[in-house]
Length: 184
Ligand SMILES: [Zn+2]
Image 1: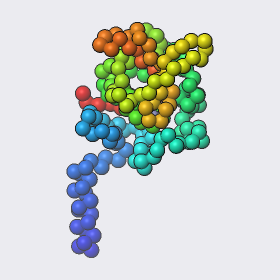
Image 2 (image 1 turned 30 degrees about the vertical axis):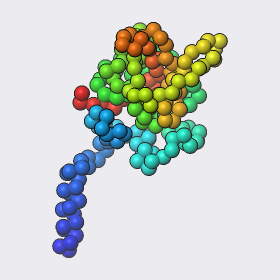
Image 3 (image 1 turned 90 degrees about the horizontal axis):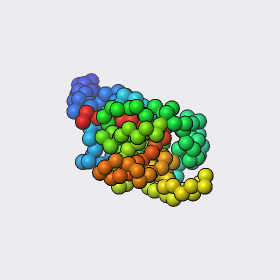
Image 4 (image 1 turned 180 degrees about the horizontal axis):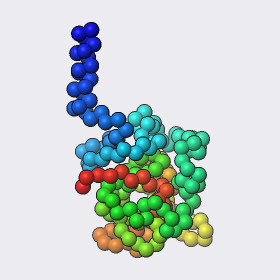
């Protein structure tokens, strides 16, 4: 009995030190560079990241089950959401924007700007591993497609008419982004 009480006490101490707060969640990627993040919302990719899944091997059946029909069409089939309809267009909160398919960190809210295009726009990526670029020749145009650097989700396109310091405009689909608040 005494041992059980001691074990319970140890567990409580550990929880208070490491922050066992129910549904709260911290991103644990590159802790040295990551600002402190915590969200009470639960995302499907959190469990998968905790398991250390290889996102490149995730099958279409997983995406169909865990993404909304719109997210599946845009993020997994390179669709585009209608302008001025996305949930993050007017989101001015501090934090990080991560891939809604896998939770990979894509953009810092500090680089979000008002482009007037109807889609959330950023002038820079979070780091050089955040996204990958591909040439997209669909619809008779040559554009640069932006995909998630980890799970290859289609995110949008990048154009060279953005503001300083980069001169780039990452034109993103809201449905491909989840917003994770930070204090700074
Ligand atoms: Zn992703």
